Amino acid sequence: MMNSDVKISCRDVWKVFGEYPPELFEKLISCSDEAKLSDITARCTVAVREANLDIQAGEIFVVMGLSGSGKSTLIRCLNRLIEPSRGDILVDGANLSEMNKQQLREVRQKKMGMVFQHFALLPHRTVIDNVALGLEIQGFAKEKRYTRGAEALELVGLSDWDQSYPSELSGGMQQRVGLARALAVNPEILLMDEAFSALDPLIRQQMQDEFLKLVAIVKKTIVFITHDLDEALKLADRIAVMKDGVIVQVGTPEEIVMYPADEYVSEFVSSVSRTKVISAKNMMMEPDTWISVEGEDPIAVLNKMRKHNRDSIFITDSTNRLVGVVNKQRLAENLGGDVDSLRPITSKNYSTVLPDTSLEDLISEAAQTKSPIAVLDEEQRLLGVISRASLLKELADVV
Ligand SMILES: Nc1ncnc2c1ncn2[C@@H]1O[C@H](COP(=O)(O)OP(=O)(O)OP(=O)(O)O)[C@@H](O)[C@H]1O
Ligand SMILES: [Mg+2]
Image: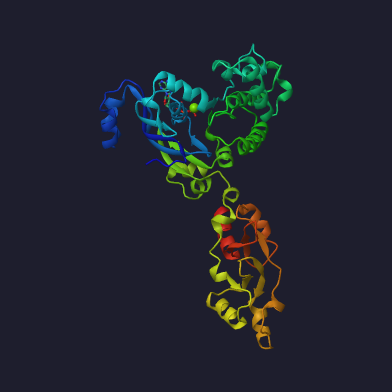
């Protein structure tokens, strides 16, 4: 049974360019000695090798890898712009290789939009006529084309430019038109091959920001190819790293950076500052040994702190919302008197962060407090605790 949230599946997909014997695949699978294979691979290029992927509905799936690693070939196999040499592509569970021309055209035109690096705009058509091109091909009447084209232009912030020609627009604006053209047909899937790579760095970052906002509104499944690690980390829900046609690792940005599968990936990510990708939720510890529930006997609380070697402990109410923090020394001193409640010595002097707070921001937070940092959800419930020791250890790894 297929998981209903899977939008696109690659099952054992290969693409080989050039001449090759039918037994190539079996030989490549069974033999790891490159030298022995050299005669059967001499006249061909294995651009994609045994790709298996499940791309989830609504995710931004980024494919990353060096030049020539097979990214463009793979993304073109997804809509059969390139015919895979072997294996299957399933879109919403339907196998593309079992479709006739008409069915395939339907899927390509209606379900999938493509955005390229070089904007591929038609120079003698106005912006609106470029944007409405896909609708025109599908046979929509002019009025319908223009209303939907105008909506797409609005999404990318170019409403006022509908009657201009591509040459009158900057690179960033042309790329927006390319994006609007893909959006105009309202596809469920966007395939984007180095879509922002031709843009200047600042414009590129701006496009990434706008793109994320836009995607949050239009909710599409996106396959996005890039060379650029920062771009991948910023946009991706998950990243696939390709090397010589092989998908060597698939994971969240955090997984790729923290646990690179091999040397190739680790070289790719070595330049990235871990402080940007590691967030509070990756670092926090289970809160059990860091909390006591309000109303608990002070002596039991002190014993708990001694047992777990804590200098302070968080106090939560019965719904797990944070009430305050109690310091061990202060508690010990006050026990001599007649403290039968923690309330008078519970302090509000602690730092809290949200789960997505980056290590970078945690560091500045940590500088302001001596107690551990509480990780809270939006309702102030305690999800976890980050001790100063673990923060320092993480810092030692990144500097
Ligand atoms: N039409 C083709 N005919 C022959 N070989 C091809 C063809 N298209 C791609 N290749 C080869 O397949 C391999 C993968 O190419 P592909 O364009 O998919 O890589 P890429 O990861 O997109 O690279 P880049 O980052 O430079 O765009 C390369 O060795 C390339 O030379
Ligand atoms: Mg490419």
